[in-house]
Length: 88
Length: 88
Image (cartoon, rainbow over all chains, first blue to last red):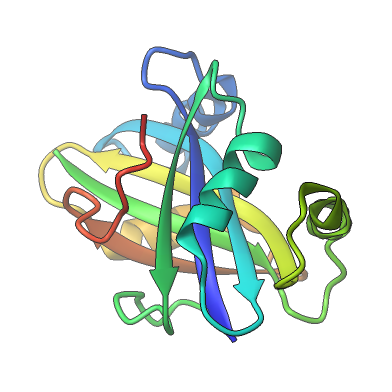
């Protein structure tokens, strides 16, 4: 089983009201050193057998992202080697 | 400017109807080798100065994730070195 992760984010020039709402709430938590927050989607696609990046790109383009307002990036992951321990 | 990425995904035992809908649509695209699709959120937090993982974890815990049904992982990123070229 191989996993492909597709990250879909609004293009930088598109306003992100959801992220802005989080950013505006941070001072109430005592956090003053955050410049911006952007919220997008992370899609995990598990392939049977070998991961197929071209196939994943086609899926992202047709089903997962709106290319008018969103960018996406695709990568194969093994076991999140760079993640910090916060997955509970 | 340093960026921290928070990935929020539904816990494995929680049903993901949105991902299921995508998975169900794939055979119509001619894709038969996908075992499952899970859809979560990716939040990019840009810090002024040094990235603060503890602060990011607090933000994720209080504002970004619902710990009853969601797991999150946190990491510092530089410039997406492992991403494929599909960001348009």
